[in-house]
Figure 1 (cartoon, each protein chain N blue to C red):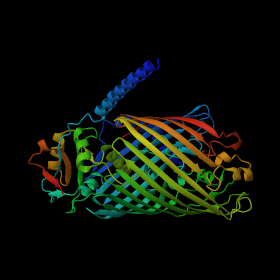
Figure 2: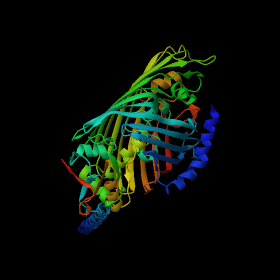
Figure 3: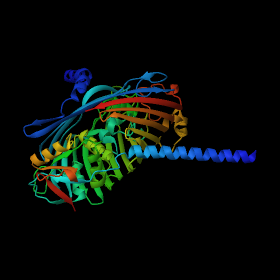
Figure 4: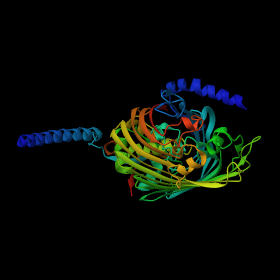
Amino acid sequence: MYAPFKFAKTVVERFVPCALLLWTTFAHAINLMGSELQLHGFLTQGLVTTSDNNFLGQSNKKASTDFREIGLNASLRPTSDLQLSAGLLSHKAGGTDNGEVRLDYGLVDWTVSSNEQGRSGIRLGRVKNSYGLYNKTRDVAFTRPSVLLPQSIYFERTRNLTVAGDGVEFYLDRNYEAGNLFVTFALGKPQLGSEASKVALVGLVPNGRFEPKVAQISQVMYEGDGGKYRLGYTVLRFDTPYKPGVKDVLQAGQLKSMVQIFSAQYNAENWSLTSEYALRPISSRNFGPNSPDATTRGQSYYIQGSYRLAPKWEAILRYDVLYTDRDDRDGQAYAAATRRPGFTRFSKDWTAGVRFDLTPELMLRAEYHRIDGTAYLPVQDNPDPRALERRWDMFMLLGSFRF
Amino acid sequence: MKNLLSINTFALFWRVCSLYILGAFLVTTNSYADNQEPTIVVIAFPSTSENTISRSSLRAIFGMRLNKWPADTPVKVFVMKDDTPEHGAFSKNILQVFPHQLRLAWDRQVFSGQGQYPEQVVSLQEMLSKIASTPGAIGYIKTSEVTNNVRTLQIR
């Protein structure tokens, strides 16, 4: 089972970077029996250092390089109505992801009907979720607005819940003179079986695991005037049963949630303004005496402005807020009940950064974060809550190459 | 003394102001260096069934979301490099989409397995020869370079 993964990992880690460098001299499209096979990929390396706490590796007063994203994808269009695509991803992110190569997506996209007014179709297989503005290509640095996506909505911690689903996505596009409407509805099993997903949802101590069960994701996105403004609404519903481990502190309970995201973006020629707001109620039931039934209503939002200083330079400023429980924003009730610090229940992150596109294939970024609260920190990198500091700073550097 | 101070402040204000204007001018000329934008027309394979096309269809085609002509033949999209004046003028004036927005739309589709990139040509000559020889081809060119080997599409 693991041997092919190990091999693939070796290939990706050793061979692919060399191949990438050579690749630019060759074409990316190969004619395969009359249809075009396109091959693309990227290699991103980040450097993270923090004044306190750990994020994306051991970053506390040190420089962590445990933030790496390597992707390789292929697509083939045998007819104008059919596309076959697959993408492999190695995502190394501190203690939450070891960089094991996995199938990021693998799908058959069949456009059932298509004309000037729009198209409709179906994607079958492992499909990236239409979740907010950025999830579909969240691991591709070139498509992100910053080194780190706003953690209030695009958690590193619980990425497996939202990254992709194994199932089906129906899509419907409408083209109007004034703009385009994109609607998707997906039924898919999230990749929840892993240890990292369990830790993100219930912590380090319980030793069971979650059973992936079909989640529903619907999105409506309207792009006005050739994408000058974009307005979106996403709903994710999931209900996942927990399978306790041996002598587990938790019983066979269930987590249920309905996440709603409102997205808005305005794009001018040299600047963009983006904001997303999310409501994340999550209820736990039947976990037994150690975890009484409860509903915590999470709330998240960010507002972000970016400005193109020159054709190759972009600056970004963002304020990103996350409350684990909006009925207990400062975490005082939580602190009183658990004797854990209240500031682990919120994070308010001011971010300023610059992007420099050396060439269309090579990008460099630098980013500074000033954060109040530790809610988005993964417990794997910070196992002792008493060692956490409420106010911390983070500096990030990133280089990304693509072809 | 008070008078002197106010004069100094005034002079300083104008110095800062003129520097600012100069700076703004430099930035503006830098980002709009190609103000001599070429006039662009949309061109297609000569035996294409269409003579006119709507802007919303063009946006869908160049956004890689419409892959067939009304007559059911596959569309083959050709573009020039993002930083060429032709691509800039085509995106902004014909599609009315900023080139970096178009690039982002392609990236989002390619890196999630939902679309493919258009084919990039390196010169006007290559654009003309590809459009003239590829069934279903669509692209664009400077009005002054149009030949009889390609069909010009009017925007309706």
